[in-house]
Amino acid sequence: MRRIGTAPMAPERSKVRVLVVDDHPVFREGVAAILQAEEELVLAGEAADGEQAVEAFRRLLPDVTLMDLQMPVMNGIEAIRVIRSGYPGARLIALTTYSGDVQVLRALQAGAVGYLLKSTLRKDLVNTIRAVHRGGRSLSPEVASELANHALDELLTSREVEVLREVAVGTSNREIASHLGLTESTVKSHLKSLMAKLDANDRTHAVVIATKRGILEG
Image 1 (cartoon, rainbow, N blue to C red):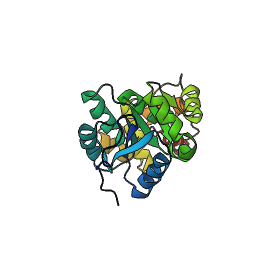
Image 2: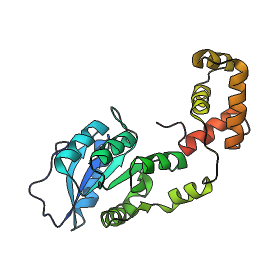
Image 3: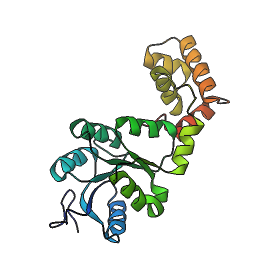
Image 4: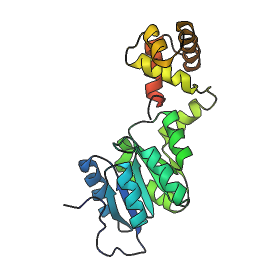
């Protein structure tokens, strides 16, 4: 069994060295198996959360890093941001089950140069790594479509996101007002605004849309 964060013995420098970051061991093993089948790719190391990812990156200096976004301790977007702040040339691919445009934008703004859905891993992983290693950017067609579909949408304000997070857990308008230090009329105003921006029929529909687009993540 591989130890998390350890590198195999003396990989050839001509090979593309890949760091895999995900909190599920079975998933990391699956990625390792895909890499092993490719002559020019090699597993440089593994990490199970964002903090381990930052430490492993600094120690191993991989050519490409696959970074899960939903992880304990430090999430993937924050880990990408920390790594890119110290290593501007780092090539990082965000790995997730979500194709929501807002989460994609957050990952790209943090410094990811690729965004790969776990559902397309077997089909797209190797080509995505190759493209990113060559200096390009890589988004799956599904992700690119989501970005294009919402490119002109007005973003929710931070306060509107706070209100919607409260709605998502079943909080009433009166309770939201108390939790956020607002009046009920202000809460209703935020709800009206965010539902218009999301083109939602009601507050429940707004939560469904926001979840799909990744607005409530992070």
